Image (cartoon, rainbow, N blue to C red):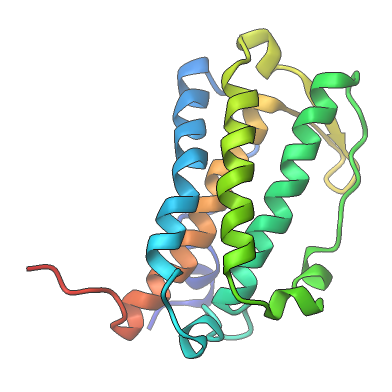
Length: 182
């Protein structure tokens, strides 16, 4: 049995102390761009029994994870645009745990999967057009007390998408829900 920390952080925690090159950011943008299709391929045809299964004891259900990704990444996109149009704006944190318990977190996945596909297309287009100076634009996150560059934000959201994708994927592996190859 996996320990709780491995279940909670299947790809490890995000390292906020890193710096990122333009080439790193291009890789992060590719990951952000690919997430909606990968996620849809993994969970898009799951029934309610699977979608309403928590990925770990005390954790969110897969349904909540998918809706959370849409909520979180919409906030990330808005933060990107604020950083590009204002000088180091202070962003508004939100209570993600509370959002995950609102009535829309019980909806079918389709609305959030459509949001993610469209949102990621726009988000990647905005970030991909930036040069190194543009990727150094910042916003201030009062929850962490940190100033975040857009290069770091891209890395963080690439990690965030993979983090939650792996929650669903490792749950599927543990329960024998993945298609057999061969």
